[in-house]
Length: 184
Image (cartoon, rainbow, N blue to C red; front, side, top):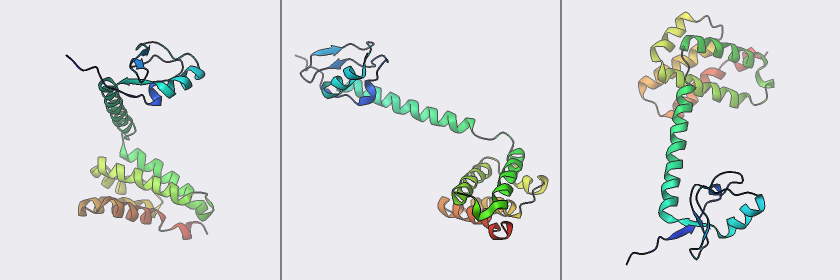
């Protein structure tokens, strides 16, 4: 005699108003409340279901794993789509942004956060385009000495195998090295 499938409480994201159910919804005692593919019609219905909704443990586990894999794949697609195509052009854009930030220096709200974001972007560029970033030191007309220093620090730090947090700190220091001089 086969054992009936075990039931577990459904996560709230399985019950969305106006969307099809991705799993069968049961009461705790195993009574079928809504079949997969039916809709939760109102917020009130969702609230009532949230208190009692259970699903087949195996089916819920499969669905959760599928969602996790879908999210991971989406993150990879987003990361791939945000990778710049031409490091020389990107360095030119970054130089303009850095010059604008340093022009106003300490008066810029959130200056540290903006410099940290630029450091992350610079680290990504040096990871993906090592040779292109080295070429940018000579080919891109950049007035900001600090961007050249930060680029060189990123390239050398990677070559030396520095841990990511230390490398990030070095690049931030390079980007901000002339903030007091620039904002005078």
